[in-house]
Length: 396
Image 1 (spheres, rainbow, N blue to C red):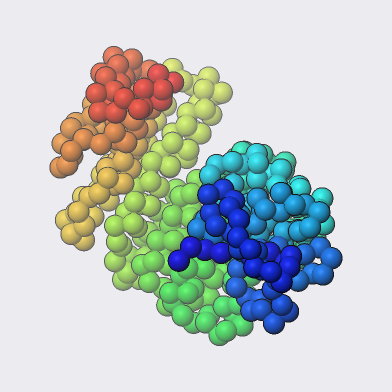
Image 2: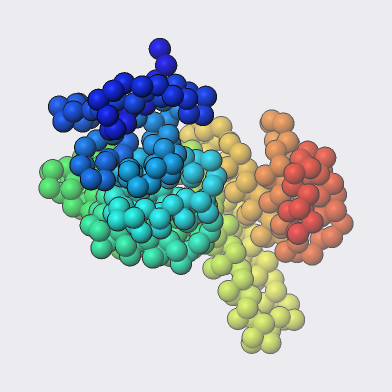
């Protein structure tokens, strides 16, 4: 049975064609079920006009309203459906114009409207427009809506404003934390571990520590969240210290824990154990001192040895099979230490089909150390695997 299109016009039932569909015109009384497909309203009487069509009802409503603008006006449901369609179809400029048009015609946006227009801002990379929409939705009282907040975080991140994304995510997380307290879930180790993870990922290590220290019991998820949080913030040495504390408390690490630990070794090597010290050496004019040079080599060697020891312990002591993430961490560690040939051998010996990600990581390391010959060989391998990476290879 074909869909029908109802209009508030007369008591007489008539039929006509519109866009290849049969449209029925019928007067609808006030007792009509108001929950079914509300499309637009009669401007004078305010009575609902009901739409049904083979296509999305609200889209037809928008088209019909455009045909007779003096008679009908879209309600918020129809505006949102039209906006959603434009965003879904990638018509982002059109969606932004529609957002302005609906307000010019006296229709106030609501939470679903804001979610779609924020998506449009994100897709277009319009940070300033996104900020204006953010300000408007706060004034409209939708600041605390979880769907709106998630859309804002995504928009800020995609527009390159990571700091604003983190601040917003942190605010939302703190609201969730308050609800946890209100519902008496503070003693639930899984809930509390999730809070530690959330605060750490948002870069608020102080809040993460506050939750962590109050927990009566901590599992591997809790410890891993803290370790990853410190790695993310560039505090590799602190992360390694936490790993030792975790083992002392009798908590066995899992696969994700070792990703954090191996990354911590690379972080210490890159930031704490190597580059920072090396810079001070150069500033002091001691770069040619043989003893100072030997000390720098020793720092690298110790950190590489420690990372490899962790890697071996993961396999032999905890029976965890290495994944691509673990190999990538070790490659990063070896690469920062200048052990390029060892890193290349590790990629060659991976137990599965060669993946482009480790080769790209090794290519970046070759660039850091100026090894042009090896870089050219690796670039050739990458292009043989994926031509789509030609641009990235050329850039490196």
